[in-house]
Every structure is written in structure tokens, then in C-alpha cells.
Length: 286
Image (cartoon, rainbow, N blue to C red; front, side, top):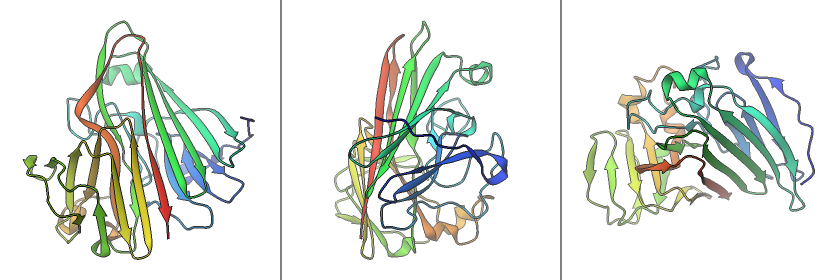
């Protein structure tokens, strides 16, 4: 694929970013901190990702919205800081390229450093590959164990979908799927209903073994499909929990829904020299 010269620009808070633009008008904005996709507009469409109006853009702070890369730990599922460190540190742009099919791809890389080893004492190379074009956003994620001991990790591509009103939104794809309620930390019996709706209490689920999900709001349909990521996480904080999130504006919870491919239930174990690959595809119609 031919390489494309893409300038690195100062973004919010002075953090470096760049814009990935396809010939058909599809585009994505990516911050180097966290290899964080903060905006995605499909060809002929409108913004699909939620970004909090009060999001913090500062070195070392997670950005509220877009697609944070949660790694090497999902949430508090282990001894590391919640959601690990990958979303809080700068990544390196390896390159940007175009293909004959009209898509453009950016590759970003993170390797271990004294700062990461102080948190998680392992040698690794992680890579995020973002591809846009047409109605799709694809994010591929890979991890290589560069050390001499094995390690385990969990994680997720924490996608914040932008909505008009979560109360008018339904999700399909979880009927018969076992899940954990992340608000109570209890395993729940699988739901029998085909559609899941939302109210002011919010929702938090890790759906084990879910391979895809369909989000519908009015004429718009968003489909998320896993690529070698065995679980799907669903999250909306609801009114009470949202009020305790300092970087989420008032009523912001009604304009967002997190739906994210992840590896949560059974962490990945990588032997020295092994490479793991996963990812997700988000497709929008209407």
C-alpha cells in the first residue's frame, strides 16, 4: 500500500494528533496519547463517536470519549490501575497508507519503557491499526511478548458511541449470552429478550462469548463485530453514577453508549516471542 504523508498537529491541550482521511470523505481523528481515536465520520455521514465536552486533554490523563485502548488490564480486573496504562501514554506513528479499495490505514506502536515497567514489569510491543473508508471503522490490536517470561493481560477497545438519546436506543445480540453485571459484580442469568433498552439507572455488562452487537436509534444502525476478542462490554453510567464522573458533562450520559469488544472473562497468556491479534469492526447505516 502506498505511504501517505500525514502531518502531526497540535490538538486540544497541545497534545499531538493527526487526521486520517479516505478519498470518499471518511475520516478519523487520532491522538498519539493512547493511540486514541477521538472522532470518526463515515463517508457521507456525521460524527459517530461521543466525546465529553469536559474531557481532559493533558499528558497522562485518559480522554473521556472516542475509543480508549484499555490494556493490559480491563477496568479493575487485576492489580494494575483501572484500564491499565496504554490509554495514558504516547504512542509512536509507524506509518499511514492507502489501498486500492479506497481505505486509509494508520499504524501506531507502543513498546515497554522504564515508566511502563514500573507499573507492569514486562517487555512488550503493542500495535494499533486504524482503518477508515466507507461506512466502517476497523481497529486492529496486536501484542508481542518481547521478554523471556510469559505474561497475561485483559483489555478492551472502549468505544463510546454518540447518541441523540440513550433512552430511545436498543441493543440486540445478547439474548442467551451469560454476563456479569459490572454495577453489582454479580453473574446474572442470560436475558431471554431479543432487545435491550436503557433507563436512568444505566447499564453495565460484560457479555461473555458475545461476537457481535447491533445498536439501533431511529433510522441509524451501528453493528459492532469482534475479531478474536471473545467478549463485548456494554456500559452507560446512568444519572446517579454520571453525576460522580468529573469529566462527563451534565446529561452527557444520555448522549453516549459504550459498546466495546474485549478480552475480559479469560485473560490472554502470551509466551516469550508469541504474538496475539484481535480487533473490532464498527459499521453504520442509516
